[in-house]
Length: 473
Image 1 (cartoon, rainbow, N blue to C red):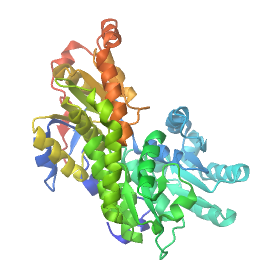
Image 2: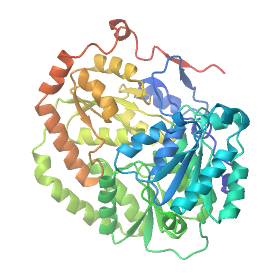
Image 3: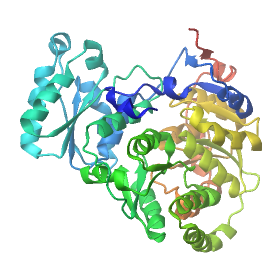
């Protein structure tokens, strides 16, 4: 990426930048071989049940920033996903919808957008107003930029246009890059400042309890954490170029932000694997300690964390337990390592996407078990049900929206939505939840007995990748 890459109004999709793959089913070893190729073959689904688009990812990222207002520029259906974030209890930002009607989609909705910006600024006096483009606006080519530029000068306010469209990329994670591109392009960053005694902790999708655990470890090294963009306000962004280093919790999401801060502002970007599991947490701490000259302190912190885990770890034995994991890619790989540290066997993974950023992680997985079944999909519960019927795991680990389908198949299921999974606290909590799920399977057994078959039997006789085809260009 070149330093002038921020001059474009948006970032190119991940399929072009990183060869991102959003559809695959097969062995880890074969996938790794493909990933090493420059011209990796793309797959498409001829039938798709559900998928998250980039607009949803934009809304999720912006919902976590403090003291801002987000305007969804589109018809009312485009804002429906925002209601999901409202119910989570962690996102409390004000947002509005221009609510374009049929006439607006033909004649243009610039007047509605202008009115919304002026009204919301007068009512709430936010630090920033985000204008989020939607598929309807992208198709009818509304002139968002002119409205934003005019009102930015008139109101003396930071107004950030986010050019998401919902259809250029097959993987929703591109939306995080789109939102981060807009943030860095339009926020007032300062250059040439003296470095402070803090680091940038790049967090986008992590839960509050996980962020607190990571911040606790950073404080244990004698450093302060400047957390962004999650839970950040404008001051967190403006001081980011003064940090000693930037370190990601999960570089799948924050890679673009860290790369721009490094290339445009000279802040070293560390991309260790997420701090999940005993080894994963130590390697994350060690990478940070080495970068800031605190290696001894990182080792001492690891010893203290391990000593706290000692009693609970000795009570766990998950030998002969088969686990299936469905989580975002780097999180899934970290969870797989943790499950194996606890003595269980990972028989399959579903990850949201795969690209060249995952080559090292996938190589580690393939070295242990080249025949491990890897499913690349976000959503697509019909494919997952087919895979689970074949592999018959003892326990399933994933988000609640996916875990419910495993439970209906009679598989003990762990939903991680409200579970701490990072750091030493995460090791203890995952271990406890795994033991609890395996100890009492009566609920899922009764659920299976009293639930109709999820799909027709004919589907289970077909290969899970029946609808995944090589893309023809």
